[in-house]
Image (tube, one colour):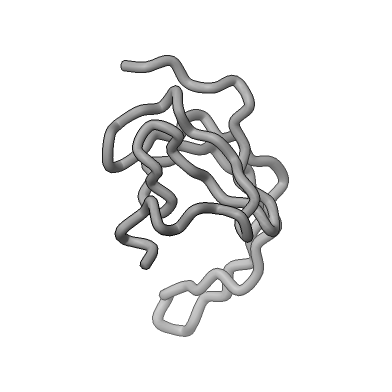
Length: 91
């Protein structure tokens, strides 16, 4: 399996992932670990719904392209300037 980039993070506002290998902008396999605090509300039948969640920490362990399988070509690009013409699923 290809080596994963050391700078793994979830893209911020105005950013997105892009596979430099095949141009994919829309399909990725992401493995991450999250530590959260949640407010659970139980109804009388015992079913719950998470009504509030606070992410305490998040670690992206791996990101790979769903199309070509590469993990060594994932990059974060500006969302506005991403070339959607290279990604048939984006158009």
